[in-house]
Structures are given as structure tokens and as C-alpha cells.
Amino acid sequence: MAKKKTAKKVVKKAPKKVLKKTPKKASSFMPTPGKTGKAADLAGPGISTYEAVDKILPVGYRSILSNKETQKAIYAVKRYIEDGLAEALNIQLVQVPLIVEKESGMNDNLDRDGSRTPIDFPCGLGITPRMNAQIVQAATKWKRWALKQYGCGVGEGINTDMRAVRKDYFLDHDHSSYVDQWDWERVITKEDRNLEFLKMIVRKIWKVITGAEDFVQQMYPQLKDPRFPNLPKDLPFIHAEEILERYPDLPRKQRETRILQDYSPAVFIIGIGWVLKDGYPHEMRAADYDDWVTPTSQWTGKDTHGLNGDILVWNHLTQRRHELSSMGIRVTKDTLKEQLKLSGQLDRLTMPYHSMIMKDQIPLSIGGGIGQGRVQMLLLRKAHFGEVTVTVWPKQLHDVCEKHNIYVLK
Image 1: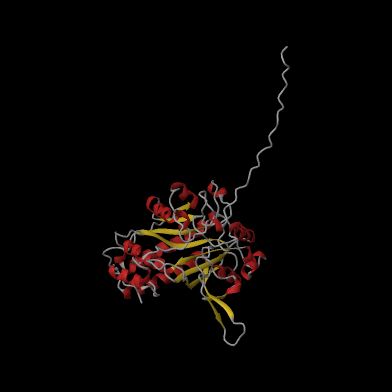
Image 2 (image 1 turned 120 degrees about the horizontal axis):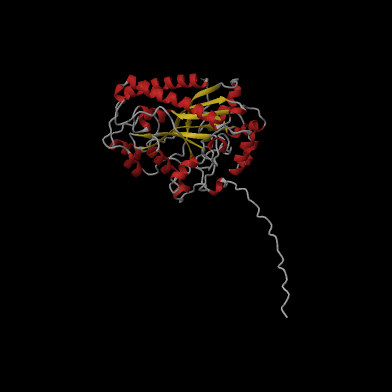
């Protein structure tokens, strides 16, 4: 007699939980000595050896302008850009600090990885304890507070002739311990916090920079040299994720070089700070000013983040990538907290600057820094930052520059 078949019991499997992907914390990709490839390319600018500097500096170089002409051109360009920014962005020049109190949280931590620290010193004779002071690395955070101090309304802002010291740079052809920037900031509304507004501001700034190039060439026609093509009048925008898609195996600086060679000799790279699809951010970015966590897929149609970016150009003289400016829409209290959490820096929320953001005591803003020496170096066709600024350089650098017929100001 055949055995009676029994129906198999169907066991329903529980649906798999969809885990929300969260970006890596800063500590997981923080550059450390000995790392190579992408991990070593996230922060700490510079070429890193003077043998490498020797190789990249141009052979047969001769400055187009004399030292005296260079100084005249520098101040003409400076006035043109300051006046141009004032008109284009509705911002005015104001006084800016060289020194801030350490406990204020106002100083710029730059790349958030701890690789570049400010100069600390006690000050104030006759008081106990003395004040803990720092030389600024940039006025980035101070400017947002200053918008309130100077009574700026929506659509108004400030510009500064900012000087700073960054002691932890490798000193090469375009990195110096001395920093000069046009550090600017402007009050915005909640509705302005989008990519289209960011692009509009970037285009205004780019028009001023390209106008300055035309202006200085009217002063010194010899600067219009076919070896060094002028900047394009239109600045393309491209997201850091798109650049990674094009060159997935290259480290950040090599990706930037390729995009300037293959796509356009000048670009604005959007979205710097958020962890990209390869598990690394395009570049480390401080957690408490630029907003790099806000999703931007509604404007890009892709899985993208960040309301900030950098202007990079191809320097035809040095044959290298050349950063001119970094800027962005600033954090809200919600995005500040999120970015500090991702960076492992939530303890900073107790600092006065961060507390003012959390309590809505300072305005929403957009701001950035434009490197004065970097712009002058590019527009005046100089091979070295030391040809347009006066600061300290090591003997190794002086020796290399002398070999390449580059006169570094002393």
C-alpha cells in the first residue's frame, strides 16, 4: 500500500531589513603617515619633497614682468577684484582679526583630521590667567558671526583682506605658511539653500576673476601670451561623484588633474566633504562651516550631497592643477550637528560659535575664500607663490628656485 504523502509545511521567511547606508566616520579614512593611494590624498596639501618640486617647476622660465611691475600689477588686480566683488555680491570690506581666543571655537580647523593645527600663545601681561590666543588659519567661522556684528541684512555681506598663518603646510611652489585671502560672507534665506543659488554666486565671482585677467592684460599686454591661454569665460560645474565615476581608480588630486585636462581647463567641483561611493570623501573638509551633508539629488538627479565646492583651474605655466577658491552654503543647526557627529566632534557644540548656530543667534549664510596669492600667481604668469608674496621659505626651496631662474621675494 502506497504511503500517504504529507503536504510540506511552508515556512514564510521574514522580510529582510533594509539597512540605511550611513557614511563612514572621519576616523575611518583619516590620512596617517604611511598610507598610500586615496587615503593619503585627502588632506595635507603640497608636493612633499623638494626633489619633486625641482621636477615640476618649469625649465627655461623667465618672469614676464619685473619685480617693480609685478608689485604695481598686484595692487591693480587687488583693487579690481575687491571693487568687483563688492558690486557683484553686495558686500563691503571690513576689519578682520589676525588673532582669536582659543575657547571661542572661531578658528578654522581646515581639514578636520587634526593634521594642521593653529599657533597657540598666551597673551595679556598683568592678568592671571593670561588669555589663550590663536593666530587664525582662516576667518571662515568668524565671518558668519561678523555678519551680525556689522548689521548685515539678507542679500548683504562682508569681504575681508584676510591674513593667516598655516604652519603645517609643506612649502612648495603654491603652498606657503603665509596665507592671504579675500574671505567673504553674505546673509541668505532658507530658500537660498540650494545648488542653483550656489551656482549663481559662483558665476558672479568667476566673472570678476576673468575680468581681472582682461584688466591686467590691458595694463601689461605682454601678459597675453599664447603659451598661457586665458581663462574660459564660462565655468562648468561638475559633482565630485561624477568625477569619481569617470576616474574610479585615481586618487583625488589625480582625478582633478584629469578632469582639467579632459573636460575643461577650469571647473567648479561640487560636494566636497561627503563620503563618495568609493568610501572616501573627495577631500577632507571641516565639519562646522560648509554644508556637505545635505542631499542634492533633486537638482542633480543622482545620489549626491553637499552645498559647497572649489574652483580649480589648469595652470598652463606650471602644468598643474591650481585651486583658486573654496566656498559653500553654511551649515544649519541640524546639519552642523550631523557633520560633527560624523566627524566625532560633537564636543564642539559647547563652544560659543557652535552654540550660536544651535540657538539661531547668527544668520544663515554663504561664504568662501579666494586665494589672493593664488590668483595673482595665475594672472601674472608666475611660476612660484613667492614671486607675489613675501614670507619664509627653506633653503632647499630657494636653491631649487634659483636653479629654475625664479626670484623669490625676501
